[in-house]
Length: 239
Ligand code: ADE
Image (cartoon, protein in one colour):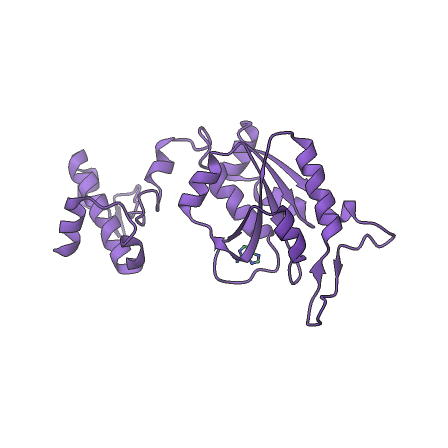
C-alpha cells in the first residue's frame, strides 16, 4: 500500500511510522510512505502557506494553492486513483472497521491541517472523506495521520509476526480484548489464571470470551449494541 502524506511536517509523520510494526511493514515492502510539504509548493520569498481568516477571528487558515499543488504532485507521482482523506476533529470517527476498509486500498493520500484549519474550498474540491481520531483538538493532523497509518499498516498481510494477532485484537469482533499473561506463573503481583495453563483449548476460549464480554460490559457497554454476539454470549450477559 502506498500512503502519501501532505503536511508541513512530513518528516514527523515518517518518524512516527519508522518503528515497530509500521517500520517492519515498510522494510517488507508492504507500506510505502511519501511526504509532501506544501511549503515546497508555495510562492514568494516567504513561501507563505497560511493567511488570516476572512471575517476575523484568531489564528491562521491554510491557503488553497500550496496544498493543491502538493496534492497534484502526490497524484502525479502514482497514476493509480486515490482517495484523499483529511484529518480533522470535524471528521467521522476513525474506527477499527474504517481501518479494515482502508487497509484494502492500494493507496491513499492523508491531508494534515495546522493552525485553525484549511480553506473550505480546498476541502470541498479535493477531499473525499474527513476522519477524526477522537473528540479532542490536536494542534495538527500529523498525529492523527500517524494513528491511521499505524492502524492500517498492521492490517497488511504479513505485517504482524503472527497473522492471527490482528484477528484476535480488541474491536475485531466488536468487543474489548481479554487480559493477557506470561511467565512467571507465580509473582508477588499475583497468579496467572489456572485455566490458561490447563491445555484445554475449549475452556481457554470460553474464559477469554467471558473476560472480553465482561470487560466490554463494564467499560464500554455502548459497544455491545453493535457487537456480533452469539446466543451463548447473550445468555452469558443476561445471567
Ligand atoms: N486534527 C486536529 N485534531 C484532530 C483530531 N481529533 N482528529 C483528527 N485530526 C485532527
